[in-house]
Image (cartoon, rainbow, N blue to C red):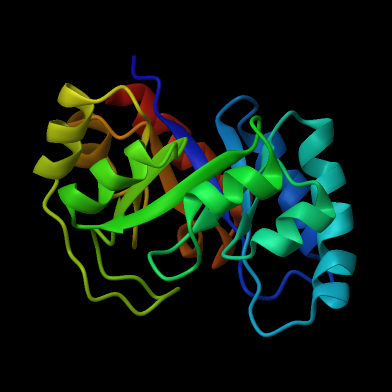
Length: 207
């Protein structure tokens, strides 16, 4: 039995029925989904905060970490549990200063061992490698080998997240290689979220 868990990433549109879908997804795998990343683009902070509010409450009620994508200022405004930064989205040290010692700060490291070690030195709480598979959610140019997860988990204690085109059908090798979290978006939101979370749960249990 592995201790790999799911890290859900929101679709870009979180309006309308999305809060109910999030509730269903989290309730489909109690304890399996441990983090939710709020990822919206090109919205002003006020609109983003309005959309975030019900989702943050849903996560808080289920003890799921609410992480803001790319935006330290929005994470601070929402008093989110943390922020996820790309390589060009700001300094993890600045995020730590702004958000405090308890914030969870994650860093995208693509396929780079160097970026991952730098993130660890800058007091990140987790590193994310990917995209492992072609993704419909985001344009990706980096394609790490699964070996990077084996290397990282053998050498470092900092958790690692696998991201990019991950589905129940292809996640097995990533779990076996030592991914602490599978970051998933399209595989859950492009269909029946309950069935998808349950399918991931089965694959994680079997790995």
